[in-house]
Length: 237
Image (cartoon, rainbow, N blue to C red; front, top):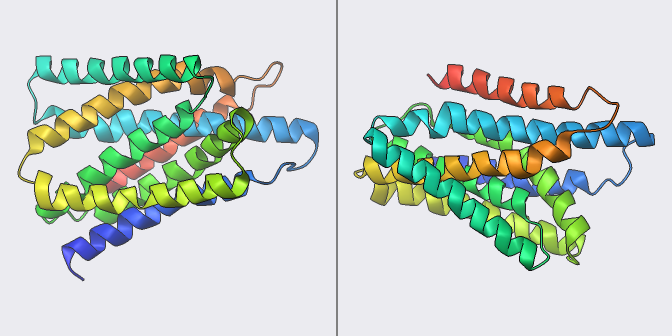
């Protein structure tokens, strides 16, 4: 199989976890009310932990070698400020899509990095794609529930949207393979920008929603999500 075919396959599989997570989220009741609340908040926390692991173990470490300290800090801060601006704009328009934004800002830079890695014959592509898939599943679940509650979009329209977004992965992966492989500084800047935005989203939106009064289980979802990232990182490296 050619390198470009591997990139398309791996990024598409990872992307399809988004509509799969949304499809699972269509189940309105998963059991007794307490279990529904615990599970939903646990999945939100799991998604937050997975995003934090992407920042701490994939996006930031894979960027620092290509940039000097000051540019790295500026790109990271720029990502946080940009996401704050998006958050303010969405709030003024009465729309909440923070988890959708966080999901895409995690998925696309990692797809770029996966494609760029194949420029150098990166053998870690399969494991990175697996990590992306495991991240996208709970993130798709959370983004679907968020959009269903805050917009008038139907379930079919949202799942179609998530399905279409999954194809952005192969586009980003091929871009990384064909155009950005020779520009590691550009890839690093994009990844740090996304990392800053993700960190903002986790603490602004996901962490507050994960808390549930008089319940102590959901935060373990964040621990589990980050633990999954640790395992993926150790396998990749």
